[in-house]
Image 1 (cartoon, rainbow over the protein chains, first blue to last red):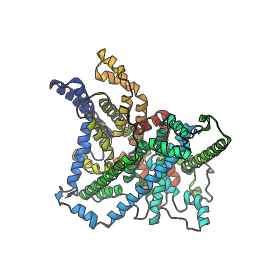
Image 2 (cartoon, rainbow over the protein chains, first blue to last red):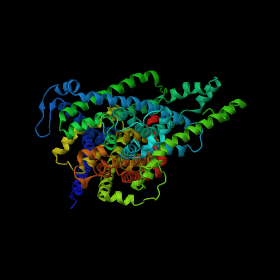
Image 3 (spheres, one colour):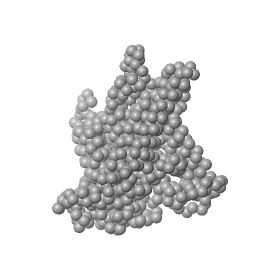
Image 4 (cartoon, rainbow over the protein chains, first blue to last red):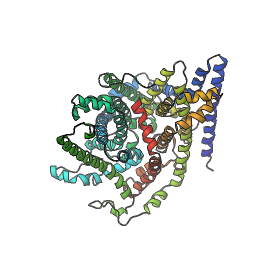
Length: 329
Length: 293
């Protein structure tokens, strides 16, 4: 009856077997060609990734680049329209700019706030506190929850009569402000997403940064102390430089992740039109309105933006990331 | 870090300052813990409330009466038995393929010298930056051309091709930390590469494998984007799509928060259990890449 389970199982076994067979075939072939054993083994072992890269990354990237210059509605084959998709995006699509600004603004707040919050928490946990393991597990909890569950939970708490407004009502009374309608007021959607995003991410970053802090040798602090450095000065001159590699990693992954926010939007279901993320817009264009070509063009703009940000961080990292002279390996 | 026990001559003023710092540290930690735990507790509490109790003011933290029946109610509001089978099925298939190939590829990168190795590894790392949505459209067209839309195949078979570059990175770090002598002895004894890999290397990186197993479970169990795009028959939905469906259609106008929170809790429960069981390895695995890299 449920033949779709069998169908996938067959696909799965066939493809798996094909991968292993091709690994052995490549090894045998390279050996025949007189390539030395180590090289042949190496290539054979990384073959699944090489194939995956070609089939699931490089091919689709090129295909989507081509599609971005076409009009493609799935029903009929793509027709070449040159730069039209890109021109329309920047000149004719009013939603594009709103969505782009919203997505960038979200990252601009979410990434630095998440990083600083996590750095503070990790620093606190590094002060010889009792039960570090327990605290660490506790802070990591939000990152373990499924994004879907987290987003639903926040949708529930961000309602006008939701828990957040109830808990914050003393402050509202104090400053004489109205309860914000987080999910219906277009101006409040961004803060709502930022609050939710911070809750979800900060624990994971804390755990990574804490490991980075624990990795810093005690000798460095002792040396700083002998040189007469106080708490603040040793934090600035020892901790931050030694942690900069880890901070860099968290920053890059944070930017990449937050620019691609997707799942949350499907569970939050806010009513205002403001506050759409770029990835959600791409999904809508591609799969709800069947504008595959336009969606591919939007995707390419997103890729270029991610590359630009990553490059900026990389370039600037020369100034602030400190690498030890010798790296392991 | 700069605790008084490390100073040769502790003076009383620094000791006082240290006590104040300690109080400040614990106070902050407790506040942060509250921020983390209150929403979490609210989810559990809501999942056990009767509908009339949802908007009671002031909020009631312990429901009265405790409505355990929300859980079976939520479970039967949609065919969640079917959703669970679908989720477990796709998660297990994808996990197995993903972990197996990641380990093999990581071993290749860690232990064998071949021309272009470093360049290829950089390419692998840089694929982490690719926005998934960019490749999604061509992938969708590919799966459509082989007639696999609305099947589990797109959600599982791709895992044979190393889904997560971060898993390869993590496992490679672990393989690199194993002394070469261990396998060299075995190779001298005439063991083949698959044998060395299976009998010697894999048991040594067990902690990393466990960490990856948890991460992979989490990723596939929660895979919303793939399910949303490839599946369109209700009977084939995984739990995450069922949850979204419930929230967006059946419960849109008058949200049944008690049921939705019960479903969220049920969805989160297996991941929470796994996380607590494998916690030690998990944290180690999560951090090794970022810190050593």
